Image (cartoon, rainbow, N blue to C red; front, side, top):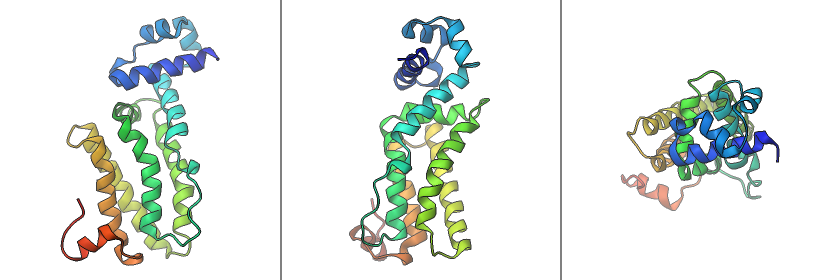
Length: 198
Protein backbone atom coordinates (compact mmCIF):
# COMPACT_ATOMS: atom_id res chain seq x y z
CA UNK A 1 0.00 0.00 0.00
CA UNK A 2 1.34 3.42 -0.99
CA UNK A 3 1.54 6.14 1.71
CA UNK A 4 -1.05 8.13 -0.26
CA UNK A 5 -3.48 5.16 -0.09
CA UNK A 6 -3.16 5.02 3.68
CA UNK A 7 -3.54 8.80 3.94
CA UNK A 8 -6.75 8.68 1.89
CA UNK A 9 -8.07 5.77 3.98
CA UNK A 10 -7.50 7.77 7.17
CA UNK A 11 -9.15 10.87 5.70
CA UNK A 12 -12.24 8.87 4.76
CA UNK A 13 -12.42 7.44 8.29
CA UNK A 14 -12.24 10.94 9.77
CA UNK A 15 -14.85 12.29 7.35
CA UNK A 16 -17.13 9.38 8.19
CA UNK A 17 -16.76 9.73 11.93
CA UNK A 18 -16.76 13.49 12.33
CA UNK A 19 -17.22 15.25 9.00
CA UNK A 20 -15.20 17.88 7.16
CA UNK A 21 -14.01 19.71 10.27
CA UNK A 22 -12.63 16.48 11.76
CA UNK A 23 -9.89 16.25 9.12
CA UNK A 24 -6.83 17.85 10.72
CA UNK A 25 -3.52 17.23 8.99
CA UNK A 26 -1.58 16.43 12.17
CA UNK A 27 -4.20 13.82 13.08
CA UNK A 28 -4.07 12.38 9.56
CA UNK A 29 -0.27 12.14 9.71
CA UNK A 30 -0.39 10.47 13.12
CA UNK A 31 -3.00 7.87 12.11
CA UNK A 32 -1.43 7.19 8.71
CA UNK A 33 2.03 7.01 10.31
CA UNK A 34 3.55 9.48 7.88
CA UNK A 35 5.09 12.93 8.28
CA UNK A 36 3.32 16.19 7.49
CA UNK A 37 5.98 16.70 4.82
CA UNK A 38 4.88 13.47 3.12
CA UNK A 39 1.27 14.64 3.12
CA UNK A 40 2.15 18.04 1.67
CA UNK A 41 4.28 16.44 -1.08
CA UNK A 42 1.25 14.56 -2.36
CA UNK A 43 -1.59 16.92 -1.35
CA UNK A 44 -0.69 20.65 -1.41
CA UNK A 45 -3.69 21.73 0.69
CA UNK A 46 -6.08 20.22 3.20
CA UNK A 47 -8.97 20.55 0.78
CA UNK A 48 -6.99 18.86 -2.00
CA UNK A 49 -6.53 15.95 0.38
CA UNK A 50 -10.24 15.80 1.19
CA UNK A 51 -11.17 16.13 -2.51
CA UNK A 52 -8.81 13.27 -3.44
CA UNK A 53 -10.36 11.04 -0.77
CA UNK A 54 -13.90 11.86 -1.88
CA UNK A 55 -13.03 11.34 -5.55
CA UNK A 56 -11.78 7.86 -4.72
CA UNK A 57 -14.85 7.06 -2.62
CA UNK A 58 -17.24 8.36 -5.28
CA UNK A 59 -15.54 6.33 -8.02
CA UNK A 60 -16.03 3.14 -6.00
CA UNK A 61 -19.44 3.69 -4.42
CA UNK A 62 -21.58 6.06 -6.49
CA UNK A 63 -20.54 5.89 -10.13
CA UNK A 64 -23.52 5.01 -12.36
CA UNK A 65 -21.13 3.64 -14.98
CA UNK A 66 -20.90 0.63 -12.65
CA UNK A 67 -24.61 -0.06 -13.10
CA UNK A 68 -25.56 -3.42 -14.54
CA UNK A 69 -27.03 -3.26 -18.03
CA UNK A 70 -30.78 -2.58 -18.03
CA UNK A 71 -33.17 -5.48 -18.48
CA UNK A 72 -33.85 -6.51 -22.09
CA UNK A 73 -37.41 -5.15 -21.87
CA UNK A 74 -37.76 -1.47 -22.81
CA UNK A 75 -37.21 0.79 -19.83
CA UNK A 76 -39.42 3.86 -19.44
CA UNK A 77 -37.71 7.17 -18.72
CA UNK A 78 -38.87 7.24 -15.09
CA UNK A 79 -37.47 3.76 -14.37
CA UNK A 80 -34.17 4.54 -16.09
CA UNK A 81 -33.64 7.85 -14.31
CA UNK A 82 -34.53 6.37 -10.94
CA UNK A 83 -32.19 3.43 -11.56
CA UNK A 84 -29.35 5.94 -12.01
CA UNK A 85 -30.38 8.09 -9.04
CA UNK A 86 -30.62 5.08 -6.75
CA UNK A 87 -27.12 4.01 -7.78
CA UNK A 88 -25.71 7.49 -7.16
CA UNK A 89 -27.63 8.52 -4.03
CA UNK A 90 -28.02 5.38 -1.94
CA UNK A 91 -24.32 5.29 -0.92
CA UNK A 92 -24.52 8.98 0.07
CA UNK A 93 -27.67 8.29 2.10
CA UNK A 94 -25.77 5.62 4.03
CA UNK A 95 -22.82 8.00 4.55
CA UNK A 96 -24.36 11.46 5.12
CA UNK A 97 -21.19 13.01 6.58
CA UNK A 98 -19.37 12.18 3.36
CA UNK A 99 -22.15 13.87 1.37
CA UNK A 100 -21.88 16.98 3.56
CA UNK A 101 -18.09 16.97 3.08
CA UNK A 102 -18.58 16.55 -0.69
CA UNK A 103 -20.76 19.68 -0.78
CA UNK A 104 -18.45 21.66 1.51
CA UNK A 105 -15.32 20.70 -0.46
CA UNK A 106 -16.79 22.07 -3.68
CA UNK A 107 -16.66 25.58 -2.21
CA UNK A 108 -12.91 25.33 -1.66
CA UNK A 109 -10.02 25.42 -4.19
CA UNK A 110 -9.92 22.23 -6.23
CA UNK A 111 -13.44 21.27 -5.22
CA UNK A 112 -14.83 21.85 -8.72
CA UNK A 113 -13.31 18.44 -9.62
CA UNK A 114 -15.94 16.70 -7.49
CA UNK A 115 -18.78 18.27 -9.46
CA UNK A 116 -17.03 17.46 -12.75
CA UNK A 117 -16.53 13.86 -11.65
CA UNK A 118 -20.20 13.45 -10.76
CA UNK A 119 -21.30 15.06 -14.04
CA UNK A 120 -18.91 12.91 -16.09
CA UNK A 121 -20.28 9.78 -14.43
CA UNK A 122 -23.98 10.57 -14.72
CA UNK A 123 -24.08 12.18 -18.17
CA UNK A 124 -23.28 9.08 -20.31
CA UNK A 125 -25.67 6.87 -18.33
CA UNK A 126 -28.52 9.37 -18.65
CA UNK A 127 -27.80 10.24 -22.30
CA UNK A 128 -28.73 6.68 -23.31
CA UNK A 129 -32.15 7.11 -21.69
CA UNK A 130 -32.93 10.16 -23.83
CA UNK A 131 -32.00 8.61 -27.19
CA UNK A 132 -34.89 9.20 -29.53
CA UNK A 133 -36.37 11.98 -27.39
CA UNK A 134 -36.86 15.48 -28.74
CA UNK A 135 -33.65 17.35 -27.74
CA UNK A 136 -35.41 20.29 -26.05
CA UNK A 137 -37.46 17.84 -23.96
CA UNK A 138 -34.28 16.10 -22.81
CA UNK A 139 -32.64 19.45 -21.99
CA UNK A 140 -35.68 20.60 -20.02
CA UNK A 141 -35.87 17.38 -17.98
CA UNK A 142 -32.13 17.52 -17.29
CA UNK A 143 -32.29 21.17 -16.21
CA UNK A 144 -35.25 20.67 -13.86
CA UNK A 145 -33.91 17.47 -12.29
CA UNK A 146 -30.41 18.96 -11.87
CA UNK A 147 -31.79 22.04 -10.12
CA UNK A 148 -34.05 20.00 -7.87
CA UNK A 149 -31.16 17.68 -6.99
CA UNK A 150 -28.94 20.66 -6.11
CA UNK A 151 -31.73 22.20 -4.04
CA UNK A 152 -32.34 18.98 -2.10
CA UNK A 153 -28.63 18.47 -1.43
CA UNK A 154 -28.30 22.05 -0.17
CA UNK A 155 -31.36 21.59 2.05
CA UNK A 156 -29.65 18.52 3.49
CA UNK A 157 -26.39 20.41 3.99
CA UNK A 158 -28.24 23.19 5.83
CA UNK A 159 -30.05 20.71 8.08
CA UNK A 160 -33.52 21.29 6.61
CA UNK A 161 -33.94 17.67 5.47
CA UNK A 162 -32.14 14.41 6.15
CA UNK A 163 -30.00 12.58 3.60
CA UNK A 164 -32.71 9.93 3.30
CA UNK A 165 -35.17 12.62 2.08
CA UNK A 166 -33.17 13.47 -1.06
CA UNK A 167 -34.06 10.40 -3.11
CA UNK A 168 -37.84 10.53 -2.42
CA UNK A 169 -37.81 14.21 -3.39
CA UNK A 170 -36.17 13.35 -6.69
CA UNK A 171 -38.56 10.43 -7.23
CA UNK A 172 -41.57 12.74 -6.92
CA UNK A 173 -40.01 15.26 -9.30
CA UNK A 174 -39.04 12.69 -11.91
CA UNK A 175 -42.48 11.09 -11.73
CA UNK A 176 -44.24 14.42 -12.28
CA UNK A 177 -42.00 15.20 -15.24
CA UNK A 178 -42.29 11.81 -16.93
CA UNK A 179 -45.67 10.37 -15.85
CA UNK A 180 -47.14 10.56 -19.33
CA UNK A 181 -44.13 8.88 -20.93
CA UNK A 182 -44.26 5.38 -19.49
CA UNK A 183 -46.42 2.65 -18.14
CA UNK A 184 -48.15 3.27 -14.79
CA UNK A 185 -46.70 1.41 -11.83
CA UNK A 186 -48.52 0.50 -8.60
CA UNK A 187 -47.07 3.55 -6.85
CA UNK A 188 -48.05 5.90 -9.68
CA UNK A 189 -51.67 4.72 -9.85
CA UNK A 190 -52.27 6.36 -6.46
CA UNK A 191 -51.16 9.71 -7.85
CA UNK A 192 -53.66 9.49 -10.68
CA UNK A 193 -56.38 9.15 -8.06
CA UNK A 194 -55.25 12.30 -6.29
CA UNK A 195 -52.96 10.75 -3.67
CA UNK A 196 -49.21 11.28 -3.71
CA UNK A 197 -46.85 8.39 -3.01
CA UNK A 198 -45.41 8.40 0.52
